[in-house]
Image 1 (cartoon, rainbow, N blue to C red):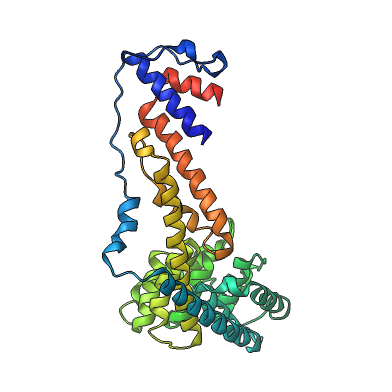
Image 2 (cartoon, rainbow, N blue to C red):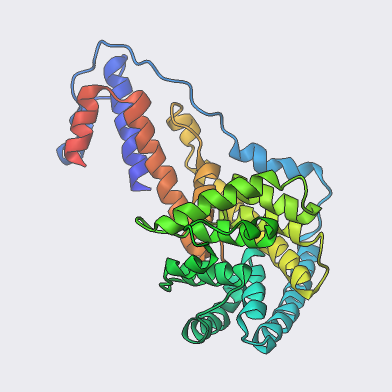
Length: 354
């Protein structure tokens, strides 16, 4: 890469000026010379950097028995075929489920939280649009809150005034709601989709959070775990893939169905794809030999990949995931040059020339 060669050349010029026996610069074309400011007499104080971890993470699996390439391909082909079969079954279920909000909303919510919503984006969009256009009123807290969250999550505007019906004559949320743990949980999740100035959602958040915290020890195991997880990290603030992993363990306690089987299989296939992506990125990173050329820089390629994976986890974005990871990793190198290596006069020149 041009950038790597230029960086190496600059470092070699820097070393030759600070040491002895530098090669004569007369042999270098004048156009290729890069002016560097006079060396500073101030010693560099390099802060400790994060050790190189990517190789350790990837090589940790080498102690386990590995299948041959043909065996791995056969397994992957079988899994892909099974996933496609289950996908068609779930699609039929989604289409066949009545559009009465409660049934369809619960199914859509489960599909999205199990991490398989990207397979059915068109079907989900059509169903939510129909629900948005057709069903407006509901006296059931669970369906009302779930409809509010899913529609706002999809980009539809739903007035927060729909929750006024759950207040008493004094303008406070009805005490009868306290015994409805699933309803309170739906209200708590919906309240996080409020915007500035929606006071009723701020009230709903405080009301639901306070009462959910007191009922964790009295609810069923699966509900108690879900309440505990959501209070710690609400859906709106959870990284998609981490949220899927948590919800899978909760969902399977009460369900053993086609939807769960499809979600587990899809999760495993995506995880293999992510490991392959990370392996490719790490090979690219090691080939640049930054650990030797720029020993002061941190090895953050795994961290950078994790950042991007929180945005692009779907298979169709695999190329974008790799490219953005590489961009952030290179940006991290520049950041370390500023933070722990470059002197003020050098950085000023670098900034002016950039």
